[in-house]
Length: 130
Length: 453
Image 1: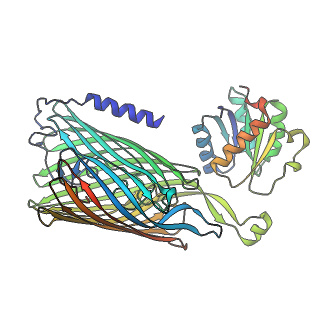
Image 2: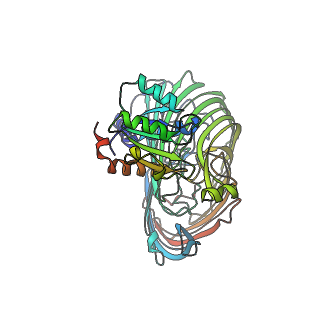
Image 3: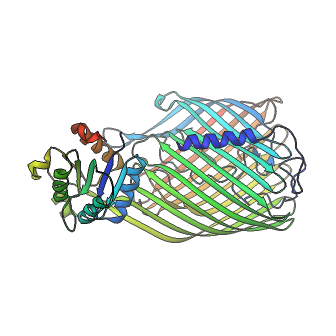
């Protein structure tokens, strides 16, 4: 799998750290954030455009899907993997983001995350372009 | 990448090891009459050394055997259509070869323990295959005060019963060696440990070491592991019979196939003492700070389960503990027999199901030469794992074994061996008892057959 620039959003700090290390060990470049607001702030301070957003849907502030809608409009080649411990259907998402978004049901194991990333890239090849 | 680095480092050390004698420093070397720093030999640093039997170095020698076997309760990582574990028994044939021993020069040594076997099961061909275990160590003395020792341990096995299939610790303890596996599912292990010992004087030395390990399990649901660590210690020889020391070590476990990792910091004090000519004792007390973070499965409340449509969920957990540990060991060598016993409490990275765990173990071994022709040996072990976060309940396991050898000629003998293992997991119905009985011929062209330990 090609190395990606990933913006990772998860509000449980220990899980965020574990996911970050796992993705970095897989060769990806990761910017991690505990909230949608800090994710947006991070994008202002780092000099790269994310290729993939991996975000928890259920957050204290702005939900993951709302952040996804904002960033997918801003970055045309960005794709998004929304994670949730609650039932979440792709049909419940706005039409504008559906084609570039996939759902990953929590709990997931590392191989399930990798499979979801591969499948999402397969359906959106433009996201692979550096 | 990790494996490549280990191999390159080890090859460099092999190339640096000369095959000819050199002058000896004031502290003596690895061979030629022994070092001036020869306090109690056991358990002072690390575990038993490659090419050693107890505290005795043996010349490099070859041993081969062919055996008829009977295995009960071979347990693969699979279930049948009813959800029951696939367990089966089978007669079989095993061909075994071992190369073991230690070659010492005045400033360097090479220690080798290799065993490999091919197992053929008449009724369980799925388990047919080879198992290998290699411990290879090189040591070199630089100048008068510095010694460097590096060891590679590697192996693969799909049968975790019997002395030849169990990974064993060696020159410097391999913390991560898989020794409490639940299934006869293939596992691969490779590790390196390299240490530098600096002799401050004839009585005092400091050592720093680094290590890295990796365990891969073919079963998809059993967790793999990578580890790295470093340690430092100081040892003082109080007199010819007694040594004392203090140590610090750090280990990091990374678990793959799940999200989880552990950091382990340990300090310890160590005393080893030789009592008379025959008995050696070693005692260590340790304190450990352990931090584990991971994701574990939990059963959901029935209402939530109905709401979400599934019965289990996952939660992120953090486990931080201050723990104590100990190690007490004794070795007794008599003219015709050896006996040893060790009791330990420490932290290990588990067996792929129980991850970072407290391990309490007791092991004992005995070998005795009844006559020039006959010898026997026996081992016993008990260990109990208590998971630090990833699983609940304890793993309890018992192992035992006995062998008997009768020399028909100077280089050919009949051997019989019986190995037994049982374990259970608390809070589950899972448990297992199995044995392996072996009868065959052993060829030992240069030396008599080695005992069980």
